[in-house]
Length: 403
Image (cartoon, rainbow, N blue to C red):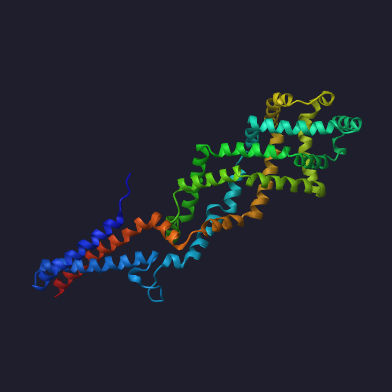
């Protein structure tokens, strides 16, 4: 569908009314009633059209070269660039993506289901298997294997509570980081999530969420509706957000953030008692349903092959899928973590918006807003000419009646 050019229509309307004034004015001077009616309507319409042309043009630039002053405001948008950017950043941070909205949306997500979906990908399974193989090989190569076997047997003989599993997990994480195995796993996870993000269903969900947020933001507020006019469509915003997330997933930004987060988590595992207790509880739940069936002697007797682990992934994932208690605890922990991150880092949304807007020069800002709202603003000029013309005719008729 071709968008109507309102600028051309506004210019033609103003030009036609101006021409009508010059043609009809001589008849008005001769005392013609029709000439006077048309001349009055065209003169009022011409004045209204010129005034609105000045007003609309003054939003973006200097009409007739008039500089901004206290009496005549011109270049209104460039002069208020910082205020517009601050309003847009505040709108995105506190209205479109508010803390309450994020928490409400995240509370409805099944993170354990997302985890299942990620680990069902062959690439993730292969990288995770390699990491576990390297870890188990390192454990097998320890000098005191008998002591290790004794610890594992204790673990399986109902003495879980006597072992500092969170401390062991912290050491496992640090070992995997040092040998780059964790990096390979994180890279595979980011690649998988990028593929999920790229799906049309995700874009549709983002579009619906943005549309609802914009509607809620603009509801019964004309000023906010005007600001909303400057924004791209919800489909464009969803596509842009989708592309931005994909870039951060693929350029290593998310991988580095996850790596730093995991290292911080490992450090806190060694120092924070409350976190140790919570992690131990999760590990105990997993061990209760899985480790008691594992043949430890076979695992440590011979070489560990990735094929063995890859073959058992479906069984392990199915057990995790059926363990509603463990999945519930995973969801609870993830949501608790994300809730904390939202509280601590929500202000970053406004900062990111400002960083994205700051490169816009005055000319680019004017071009952007004119592209989005300029055509609609031209309707003000058309309305000014038409309403002014009708008002002029009405005044002329009233003058004739009351004379």
